[in-house]
Length: 262
Image (cartoon, rainbow, N blue to C red; front, side, top):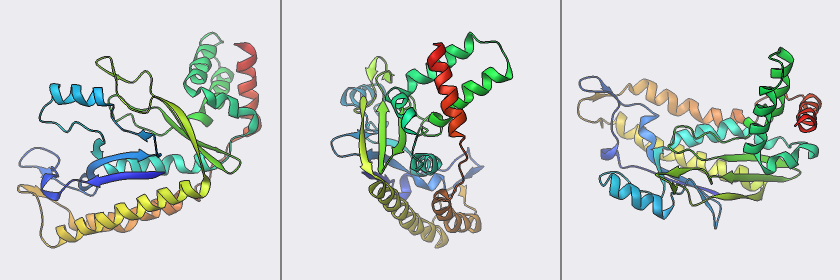
């Protein structure tokens, strides 16, 4: 596993806002491209047909194959899913992960025919939350990608189902449906390499800003930029120590009830 990314050249990074109130900050300076390389499979990799459509419809826009977005957003989303992903799911729940979207729909359908009570919503939340915590966010993309990261025993499972992610009826992503398993150590190492590489490149940008670089007409809060560069790496370290209290007995009971009643 490898997080494949590149930051755009500084002269291509656009400030936020409209003149004369344009600003540029740490997040904005991470503008670039990314995808997740799993070997033969690439996540966040646009399908050739989708790229061809994009090139025709928007000839001036970047047309793939990587996602064109702020790289730190992927970094933040991986950090968010890290703690849940590294806590193994109980064996009795693993079968549900074969179809996470189907399970969530099943839970929603079940709650829709139950009395509108606190108990109903508690059971529904318990049955879905443990899966939702293991879903890699990508709602800022259009279309997004359905990717889950979870673990069992000594393996991390990366799973995707993008069969309904379309652009004008065209499949958006090369990774349509499947999963792969890697060791926990390989998963953590891939994230650590990504983390180190991103902050090494961002330090070069912070140094350039401190030396006087700034887009014409924009302002940059240099002290805040430097502070964010110092503090953000702690987010990655803290993710491994993030407490995650899941009542697995209650969760299993909720799942079993929905399975029994649907």
